[in-house]
Length: 74
Image (cartoon, rainbow, N blue to C red; front, side, top):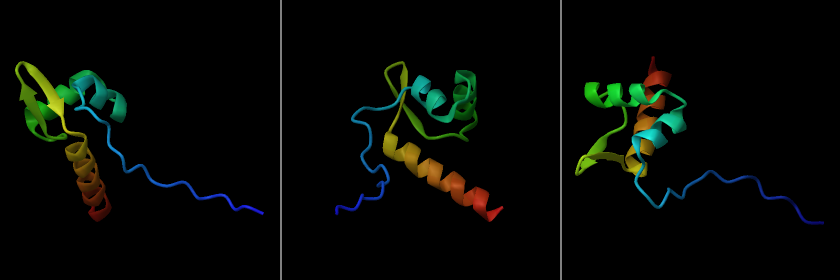
């Protein structure tokens, strides 16, 4: 009798940088909120590629962990 393996956490990041639309969809917030976060420097760190803003998935994941830690400490 085979036993089922428990689900494993996702550790593989997307193979591309994320757009502001991706961030808005990921956190289920309006796109304007993502731009507000960037302007106030309160959201995940982004960077410019020409005139486009992109987000490193690893940096976004780190930001999420930091937010979770801050929330747990409060």
